[in-house]
Length: 318
Length: 318
Image (cartoon, rainbow over all chains, first blue to last red; front, top):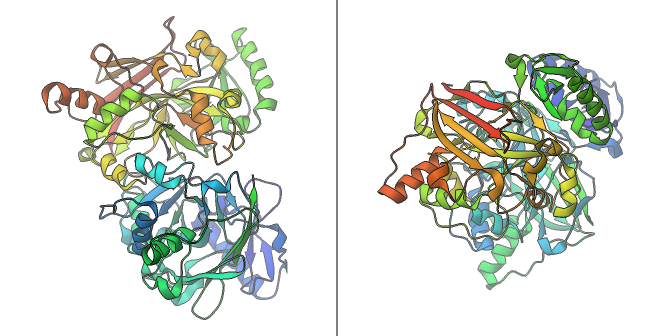
């Protein structure tokens, strides 16, 4: 089942159920944040709509109306579960290795998620504007102390995210130990949230085993796979819920998708490419984004489908 | 003007305007999160209610129904603006000094704020259960890049907060640079949010120049004043808004109130007292909280009023 949120003038938008080919949609007469708050009750009705839309019902889906599946949520907890990303970022930031055997996670801005084609405003190119392509999950209400095994059943939807990052600020904030505020402005989401079953064998071991295809100003930048997470999404959910109940609609991110085979697969953020250049040449060669730059990110299943649709955005001056 | 939120079965609760003596209240027919989203329009109506309640109208206020003024909000950004607190915490955590000339700030859990008398559940005493008494402000919508001078006008309400903290986890998470997730469960708020004018001369230089009186299991623990912030609240708001619009209802915290005169004034968290003991005796003497323990925190103006009411809570087993 694929879900999207359309612009209807309200903060949370109008939930629709979308056909597998993305051409048609049926309105769900609710918002996703309302539906996820009582998923056990809302899911059967949404599944019934999905059956109808697959049977040919529904209106043409207007891409111009598509917002983030959750235009806002109460909680966004972003992991950093790809070890290869962490290793390269330590080089990029010139920081010592992080010594921990636990998942890395920070709480980020969740009052606004940009839609997949929204222009994204940044005040200054000097802040080091970078994208971070990742996958995420949306959970229903999760009780404090949940085990990873029990957490899996709370993962109701999977999304694709661009975690916009400001690299000139990130290491400065990181050194304080307080995490990121200025370095992590609002994220963007791809058009469609999907139920895990939609991914078939590509939702495996609690990981989104899809490729993430990234282009920057039309040039190929990376084609990285989500399978190399050091911790699974259920483990990230359990980590997040160790001392708090997770409110329904909480989004948990994988962190930047990154692979050991970066020489052939490339990256899902500029900072990693710069670190790779530092290793190879002693200094970074690639500049961060400029106003007017465009980034496109599309998750692909092994059979070539793009279940989340694409994020395709331009960076603009704030 | 004093505002409170009453339990009415909804997630956001029912906003009431409370008399200066706390005895009576008039319903505002909205929630605080809705009112703050359009403060320019809602404030005059709320002020009119305040005039009526001061004229003797209204129903008796039932303390048992009082929730946090904002039982949930879209964003909670907590500063650490008292240098004395930072200096003592570095000793408590055995970490090197934080080298930064900017305000310290992290984004915390905002989907739930406990009411002033709610029992607060914690899974394990071994996590090092501690309180942190602080003041905070609630802003309306703040544009990205706001100056500190312009930020002051966006500070609409002032609140009193207990930022519950788990000290066995905090330094572990801090060392990752990602900030705190497990170490910072939901906070609590005192009964009343007040407009800045309510504090009179005790809202000064962008600081809440009230005493915060803390007792632990009935024993005096600290009486610290909010005037020694190294950065004012408008400066904290501007820091938070450097790269993001702040959504209306954002709560910005001062961090634990702490004074240079800790020898006579005491502290607003146990960890500070332990650091002071480490300085004096080489080792901490005071244990963290146990299930069943009670903490009370009450802000006091110089003329002895308690504009926020009191947080008075018991720690229970999750």
